[in-house]
Length: 418
Image (cartoon, helix red, strand yellow):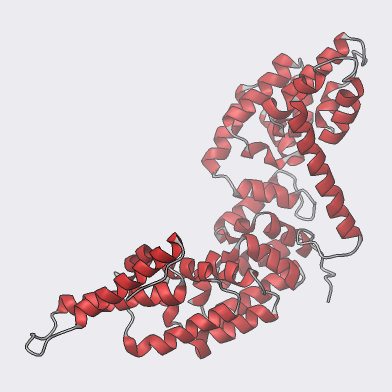
């Protein structure tokens, strides 16, 4: 039989399908005098039928379909039900690529009940704004959603998040980054930790900010949450202070042994324990920096910039900055400008290290490029300047959107649009 195949892609698809059909036929076709099929031949037939269905209906490649068929079997009596599941998911935005990924990781999804599982869950999610590509992306990032009860798990978690974050829009932002929030044990971790923070005087909008910044903080064990809150209060941090949630997040993210090690590192560099906790309360990220970053930063500020130790302790956020990408390029530019007497010698270099990139480029690089050839290259070149310009444009564009009162997924606002 002549077959018109116009491209290599079509040829491969044709060969795959012919292989599957031939394989299936070879394993089940018997002559009148043939013995009954062995377990092996029946299993092979089932695998071929499964693979054929996965290729033709779900978009899997032949290799992936054969791999899935080794651990997942489809019986002919189930084909109508399985096709209904596939069509239902396609009708809700699942492409063949989405389906292929989903089935490769959890082939059992094809056996999900439509009426008792998929339909009510998808209806609830879409009613609450999980629409378009967000729906398949959410399911793919957390397939446990299809295995958890709607009324016992998904609804309570969604409603809890909404009560804290303020509206569906903020819940969706949180779920896009941490879809596991929808299947986390509500009564085991989230609710008790939330209740504790409320009892301690942390405002709801601050807890919302904590969840948006670092949702894993809310799933820490209750004992650890209690001890961490107590430690921060002992340091003099009030739960109603804006910095409290930042300190809480920082403290929860590291173990006690790691915290002690960072303290010893800082002490070895001349910090007292009082200095450390004073700086931590101003800049909680301090104890999250690696030992290498802390040592390199202190060496640069104390030995290269000749900045006194107390200046760093008073402004610990200086240790945030990258030496290679920010500090050293700026330092080199400022030293040249100083040597050419283009800036005052007693200019506070610490302040110039903290200003934003756009301002530094404008006032200390572009302003003097004609006077000092190669200054832009010394600072990082035109590529860096272009990147900064694009970042600035993006920020300005975003600000314009906010000013136009269009919804922004990164703004926590309990007065969300209806």
